[in-house]
Image (cartoon, rainbow, N blue to C red; front, side, top):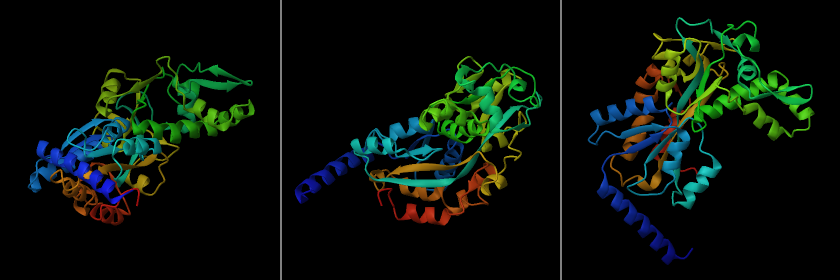
Length: 344
């Protein structure tokens, strides 16, 4: 690229950035409902302790937040996207196509996905991936053919589970939590039951077989929740037989309403997630638009505060709320301080 073209491009970005600065003076964040409570805690503390306005934090799901993040650079686009999964290659390409070429990926810590039900409801105290797969899969391989899942009660999936109607409330497809649920529960259950092997034996390639493993039934037994965990809790409140998928932090703040099940014999806790013992855990992220640093007041300061020892360390308020502190937090702090982008 010529110097003239580079200069023109830099001036264009600067002009957009200047407009952004003139238009607003607060940091704007959107994305994962799992990261939402952590980001909200940090935003409130930031507003109270720094000479910057309190950042605006919205939910909507990881995919929705990253979509907004990748819309472009400037006053109408958000500065940070929260995500309960890593950004996808296709999202990075969309960002680049819209001028968002420098992205800083920040790993906040870790969280676990838990399976919880009404405190005084049926005895949903222990699940395995196989139980969830056999209860919720759209189709199962039987005698060399794929047939519709006819399990009516949880006991049909596992005789040791309560003999009540299956009613599962799972994250909708726009949530990062859904992908973790598919990969670490449905596909693992599919493998454990021998269904994946049977599908391949029927002539499916492995990619199609895994897609079939992740497909959930649409007959009302499994219900997608597109809102945040409060919507899932509301469904559980009105359905005593319901089982919902929640983040560990949300469950720990609602133990007066919910009881949690073990997964493969392991109880979810900050300790079992930190050790990797609990099988359904995942890292949490936020993504910063580098072009907005130095333009949107307080953006870098907010990001550094978010991952500081005082906030995201093992003794900080985020850990008290359920976040499992990242053992490599110091490296993350250095990445933010140095504005290290994914392209680097």
